[in-house]
Length: 178
Image (cartoon, rainbow, N blue to C red):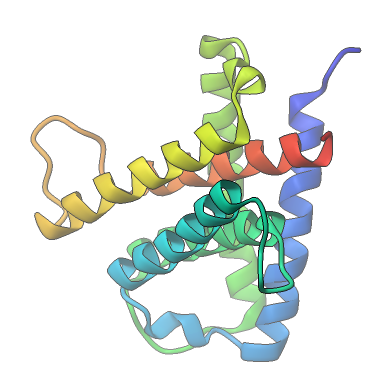
């Protein structure tokens, strides 16, 4: 069976965007108050919950890992927006959606380039390995944040957020075909 990664990516990001839009209705852009470091920690909490559920084999709270991967995507997009705009006042919902779409578009462009070079190696990965890579990216991000965003050789916080988005989307694609 031939796979269409771009279509699968678009389908998964549509689910994430739908949830982002619904929460935007419920909460507005209250997240505009958050610093990128706080968003990194929020993503960390979600990734650790996924890992905990994977290791224990069950969840006590009635939400599975899929919703946590969606949360990782959405918080990473918010992180990118906050890096771009800085913390501040709430913005109109339509502006937030346009910014969301722009960041997802960047993530998709990066995914397409890397997918070409890596020949869709992610399709052979386990979801647990994807979780570990996201956790590694989070620890890297925290180190960079602790160095005031300065790196000597590595990519910055924004690149790590983009990678987290893409890995979380890959996990959602895997889980959909399970």
